[in-house]
Image 1 (tube, rainbow, N blue to C red):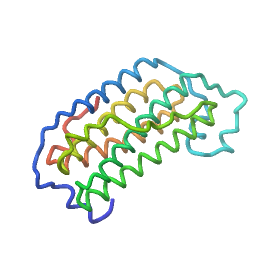
Image 2 (image 1 turned 60 degrees about the horizontal axis):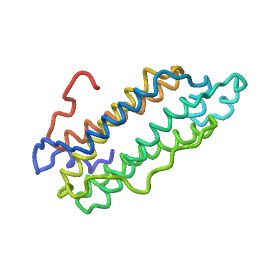
Image 3 (image 1 turned 90 degrees about the vertical axis):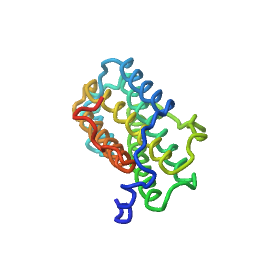
Image 4 (image 1 turned 180 degrees about the vertical axis):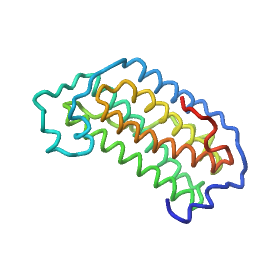
Length: 210
């Protein structure tokens, strides 16, 4: 995080209680999507593929299995990352963000781009077709009137991403790949905490995430 983002942590607009219908639906939809996928099996080389270590991935590739459910779960995560990228783009171009906030938004968007690139590459290497980002998303642009609105919207989407990865981790048969998903989950959770603090809210409101 850049040093000039420290002022971002206290927005003068004060504490906000945000109820964003779209974000809540997004969270619910992601949870239900992952729950519908059920238990699935990923190949033992998936972690190497995700890390881009092609040589390591080739070891034992003859025994690798890539059921359709493997690709489905990765594409679900990819779709969530693509939505986040678009959301941060909306915020960055809204004209509502102060420079320090804009810098942080761009940084967080960069993280989501890295996640998306890794997930798309893995889907492709596992024989699937990566999910294509939508040309447009139904974001509540009419409700984004000030900086705090944008930050609150981003925070709700990050919370949804946490829930999505939380649902994916326990059903990954390849435990190494589960570790990668958990690592991404941690990144999303940090985003959420920073954004909550920026709104004057408790950055870590509960001992457990759901």
